[in-house]
Length: 285
Length: 285
Image (cartoon, rainbow over all chains, first blue to last red; front, side, top):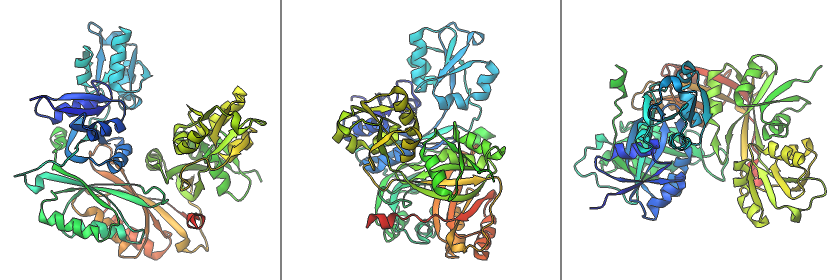
């Protein structure tokens, strides 16, 4: 059987590629894409069976572009994956930590490693992405430079890892969504081990968001995320994205969503999928 | 009496400067700042009495950086202003529309005017901001180029306006907040003509957001905005920003906030201020 193809945004060695590999327990082919639109296109047009998209970082917040693209496209969320974002300091083989004068990376990665980079006393050089800075280091053959990127990028560009966990705040996770052209059967899986993502609009009336949340609260359904985005053409009206614990095949969830549709002029299920448990509580101990 | 100083992010002629002038019925001195942090610093340290900050655009959504900075700093919101973002096509005096071969502007402005620019058949050139592209046009003395920027930028850089309302979607508004070191008295003003902005965290328990919204819904207090941002160090927990209709001096609002504090481990009032009515409904007719 040929390996399934997963589209991701970025260059080989990107955190999105690491998440794609982490999500799949079997060998896959990862396909780099220039931007997020291209990931949606690759899956919609069938050149890839799946796509992986960062949707939220625990420090920087939501990636709103991908919320908007989920609405604009017709893909289904079939999975989620929490990746611990651990920035490694990469260098050419043979280079020692004390040789490093400058460090290349994405502005956000450089900012997240600020205290550690200051201790090293290195110059920070901004690049478009983390994996691209690892590739650049290899191309330039620069023996006085490092790059902040994923462990995966070290493998891809044959670089050594001088230091791991360069980030100042270890509570740095990105949540990724795995999307496909059709929903996946979750036969035999407990509703409590699943999550469902929906998107809806509401009439602009007092108390309407409270009423919308009541359809979940009155049924003891746990919301894990709420995100609002502008409703185009209607200034200061919103589209709401909600994630909740449970599967749409569960009669309780199903009734909650029927109830919500009484209030929502627009409503769509983005997907029901296995919940990826984050083991951050364990790490903290 | 010397004119009060208002800090804004951007170059002279920026939309933020136009909003500062639009908000104040009297003459002010506008002070350009390099970034949003500098606006907060200018007001905190007293070199400016006020600052103006974009917080949300009706097409692109919230400016999350400014939500985070409101929390990190101790300024008070004393006003809001809705600016209709109308991109003008500016050119050097004497240049005609048919002479224009290329247009300079910020990527978002170019994207918002895409259909109109395609009709003109011009090349799009990306610059860091709209007012900066107007300044560049003047510096380059380029008679075959235009810039997309505010009407205010035409005055600042002595350019002519070849066309107004270049944006494809006229429902393009930015909401600005005016901040100061101390709250302003709203003596004699009806609570119903005011808005209040607050920020709070919640314990991570099922139904807790529903309970938080109930303190407003049960008192018929109208929410106008909800925004969630990550709680640093606690992956997938959130800080909530809410705007509601009413003034904190109104006993009903006051009781709602007391009620909310029973649920919220962290709570802060960002400000009560006069509501700026958006006349978009009138424009649509």
